[in-house]
Length: 73
Image (cartoon, rainbow, N blue to C red; front, top):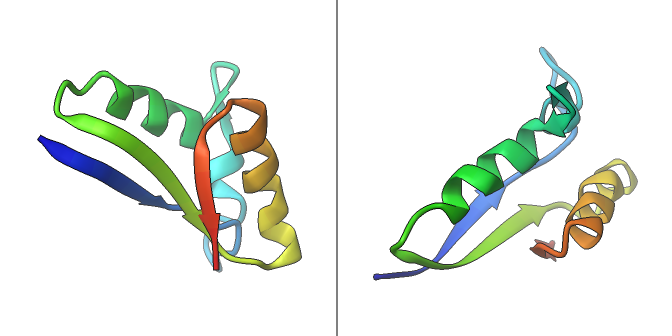
């Protein structure tokens, strides 16, 4: 059994800015990834990793709203 999985998410990108926050059928790409991972029977914890940059606060706010664990560095 895997203790945890880490999802690296950031809003900065040269080709597709805010990609993780773009919506597909009312859910962000980040939410879709988290929901798919939660279906795994071998994972205990899922963490979203992001930076302390002001723009990435949107990711943290989404994690708080959805009650998901996150870490900023």
